[in-house]
Length: 338
Image (cartoon, rainbow, N blue to C red):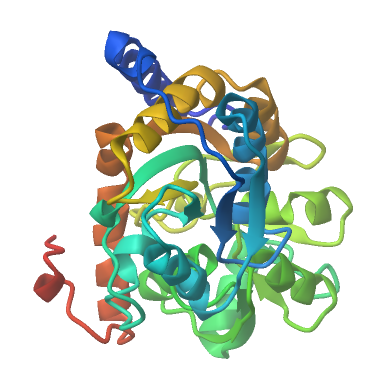
């Protein structure tokens, strides 16, 4: 397997984003939104997690172009649904956005949380993240097969950011594919989940690479497998093997992260942010550097290209929830078809 600092998917999506930016033409050039007060982005997870990290970087890239400060407000709870609903319920004046894993917008209603849909939002994606199966270094597990054997015998505590979080879907996919058993220990964000494993409160975490990277570099976590089909190289950590090396035909559970603007806002708001995304985020050296250092893929997309990238992950996750017995509402009744 080749290491994955820059994956072919990242290259393809970057080309798509560049082509989309070039096709905008004069229409966007004349779109002007001049906010008269700060814009609020509700991050529906605790500070320090993958959503918080990439949102702050992306917001900083477009802030100057807006001519107004962007204020990040962390509002964790309900696996991200509380902060997301707050943004949905805010006045549709363009001043309140949200952020996170775009696929969750489609899976919240499957869990009976909130009535959201992916196409309720204008999507602005920055990176794609993969989960890593990591353990506390004090545990005896040196390889993923050793851990898997132990989890088949007895359920072990796994820390995630909660139901429908990326870490939860990664662990559910592992359980479904291997017969592993686990005890789900939930937190209000990826960072607290990772810290719990570092502290020995839990033995395992399946949270995202950017949330684990610093602890991996400091040898405070031991990475056993990337929850994906390609090996992952993180600067200062080395190359982590893909889970497909041990579990063939493993489902894809990657996660596109970005900023979301509720539909219904003035058209000039969306047009202005699209223009800034094309000019500032698609070419952002800071986001590229972040991706390389934290084990993410730089995949900036917006508009239809973003929706098309996200929708297949909504379908996969919705049926993982149903098969795990966690769905409160059937995906089919919500228009999510295999």
